[in-house]
Image (tube, rainbow, N blue to C red; front, side, top):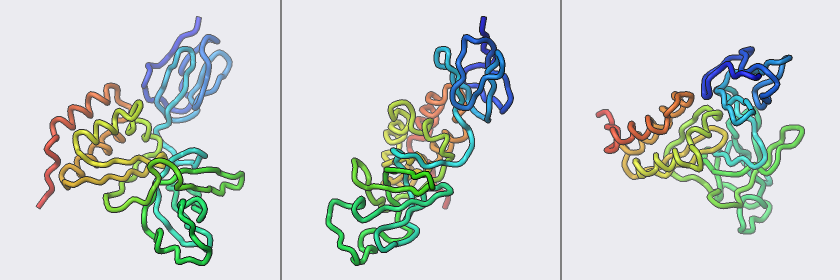
Length: 235
């Protein structure tokens, strides 16, 4: 008879035995060693029926096709723009994928996007040589004007977003801020009131710090309720 050796949502380290017996199946971040299922990395245990996997707590972002990311323009090319993906690999947004408007070759591309400007884009493909292609054609994809940028651990993004967007929706409700979360760990926040904008920032930092703690949603709701008038800025 199989036995789980750890609690669901518990933080475990590489080499730790998570379960014994053939009743359970290893998934992401785990492997089978004889009758045992072993953690292969630092992570948060997630037991779904008979499947045991780990949610990573650390590690760099790796671009994947289909990811929606936020990044700044770092260079202007002859045929488009180079964008920082918050990873070891930069990406390219080609003219044809940047706008439904016709952009002639040789046009001054700085009129559209210039170095340092942030944009929300989608990764269309990552080649075997780790060349990353982007598009800005799709719902919500656009240049981001104003606001502030916050960098978080990309592995904590699912907790910041919440199930079906529940966590980020709660932050928006209490702070009246626009909040966009890139899967590469870059967050854009824009609000009319600086105190509320700061509350959104501090709430996201709190989620990042406490992502492994059970009852996180209730804790964040209580934190927002206690600070619903915003965090006062120092003089």
